[in-house]
Image 1 (cartoon, rainbow, N blue to C red):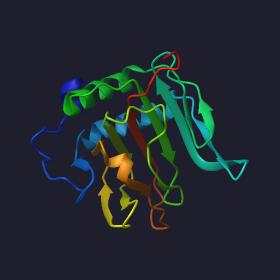
Image 2 (cartoon, rainbow, N blue to C red; image 1 turned 135 degrees about the vertical axis):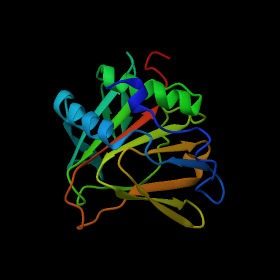
Image 3 (cartoon, rainbow, N blue to C red; image 1 turned 90 degrees about the horizontal axis):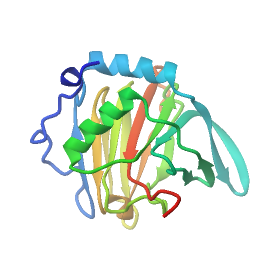
Image 4 (cartoon, one colour; image 1 turned 90 degrees about the vertical axis):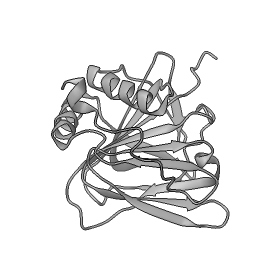
Amino acid sequence: MKQSSLFRADPMESRQNLLPKDGVAHYYPEFISHHSSAKLMTQLVESLPWEEDRLLMFGKVVTTRRKVVWIGDPKCDYTYSGIKRQSQKWTAELLLVKGQLEDLTKSKFNSCLLNLYHDGLDGMGWHSDDEKELDAKSPIASLSLGATRKFAFRHKKDKTTHSLLLENGSALIMHSPTQEHWHHALLKTKKIDEPRINLTFRNITPNDQ
């Protein structure tokens, strides 16, 4: 997968902020081509150590259908939903995508959370990516592979909502202070029977700092 065939987004392509207030989010359709997206998705499914996602809810550990992998630099372990995950090593494909998203956002990322959704019955409830390890000033860059899914924002105070379809090969960039003021969710549906992989690139504080 050559770099020239992977990266397609023009930084001038998405100037419109998706959010009406208290945050900035930009959407880039076809950030990578559909051919490159399919190839990348196959590589990630076959090469990464996917695990069942576990959440701590009301003092009990709950296992979801969704599969996850946490990738990061050394000492970039991450705790979310009450579960600590140790970082796995970067692959060549993920480093390539990371570099292109860093070029787009003019920011650096040292970690990536990958979620594998088997079909529309796998989703993600309302939440914010605001854990203490995360650099609150750094954007979060999300890349979607596979099935098109509905993604929604909901303002924490007045419950204003906005939704969009995350298409195959698209990128969504959420800038500060979006996580402070908005929840987001990947909505479930019975109409989709195809898988999707989402990659969210982040910058977190290494464990020794």
